[in-house]
Length: 155
Image 1 (cartoon, rainbow, N blue to C red):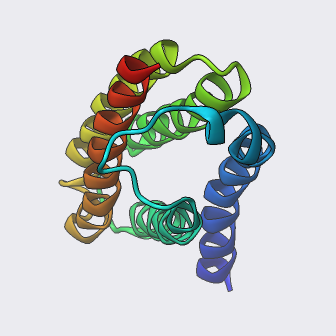
Image 2 (cartoon, rainbow, N blue to C red; image 1 turned 180 degrees about the horizontal axis):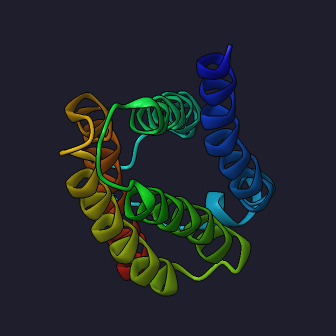
């Protein structure tokens, strides 16, 4: 029962971040974002929601695996870095979409990318599976970084 509670909490944590970010994002996609010039490699808008849903689920599973892993050393740093990258994830939505500031978004997303890499690094010794679950996230955010830079340059 305790593991189930930790699983639910882990997933709720990540999807809570998703919900906060979506408040700034969803209202601005059909309005402000629709008016921006986008690069040729920009995916269709409908693709973002399913991709992010999968990524948030993987982040939650990753957190759960670290939380329940039998590891003799303290996990505090792993939880702090996970929380930091999740906060940067939300902050990017608030800055890019909420403030409609692509260049400020570039700064935040580069910090986010570094934080995700740090997150993978600290999760690795605790649970390799948890670290591997963050690989799609780092790949997507790498792509999103290029997209964010391109949007900033074109606008």
